[in-house]
Length: 281
Image (cartoon, rainbow, N blue to C red; front, top):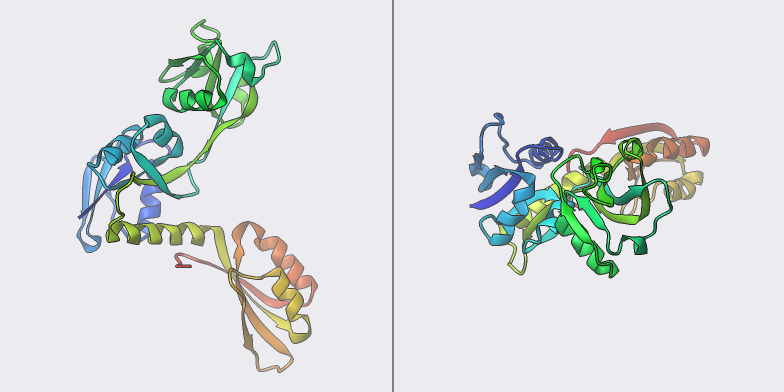
């Protein structure tokens, strides 16, 4: 039976459970449950601290898991990313006192406070910069004011918290993270895990696209198909009116309203948008 780790709390937990449900897997209804067995799909789900999941997977105790890309890299575990899930996004940046201009070279010899020492150490090594990395579990932005560090490396969203602490962002992002499916390095993927990956990929794709149906005069069908090329090619069907056709195509969800406006402008009518709940492409 396939053993999969799922975050038991934090920003990744709720969405991880939801995406697994959409993929057809049973999930716990009580947050106190630590293990759930889905006999129909031959999967055991283990609900663990997100920071520990890469360790369990990398050691071979579990075949796969869902965690953050940041946590995977920070752990140094022997595990690889198999699939990005497009939720739980975050960006890691350097920030330092705002009373001077900073660049990456200025980090050399300084103390860098972070809750992700493995990730930051690896990044600094990649940059060829030597610095002291100070591990903190929380309130990293206060470390400079309290004299524990000279600068920080942390998750940044709006940057308001950093500004309130007298810090400013500098340099390129250290990492853009999101929820990912991971498995142990250099180990053959079992069939059950291949199925789970395909199902989750189907859910991720379905969330990004909608199905668009519309009617268009034949004279404008080439222009319409250029607006809605679909993934492979749009489906075109004849209508009772011989000079009209029906078109169906997948369209990126974020572009839906713009595409509808463009189709209407060239004469398309009966434009309908349908959610996609799952797919295989």
